[in-house]
Image (cartoon, rainbow, N blue to C red; front, side):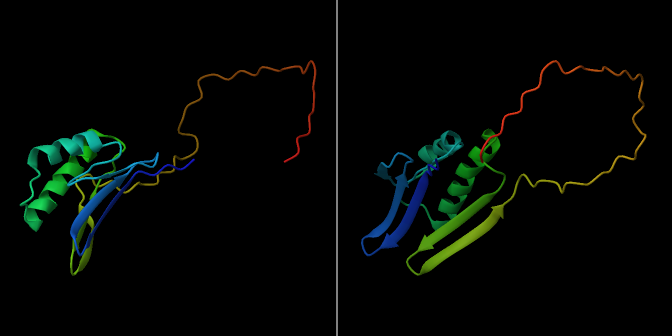
Length: 138
């Protein structure tokens, strides 16, 4: 069963709104939120530094630091920072805004045949005492 945890943000005539929607269906409206496996590290950054008067740049820095808290302290939190800046006149999606843990390109290496030395070889012959074949409908 797929159970997503969602963060939904936007702006309307009454101002900015941020909601967390939990997998079991409950909803919270909060000034900041963190969800997922790295959320404990991220929420500590948000709780200690968030205030209502953050500039756009300060908000982006705080969001980056919160995400990086998850990236560096939780193995399931990915390796990069994506940001989405939502304003009255539109949105900016900043993919790979920071990539502190770039994954190296995987190299293909083919081991030549005969490199591994076989030290000894033994064969064991088995006798089948009983065999039962069962057909299964797919």
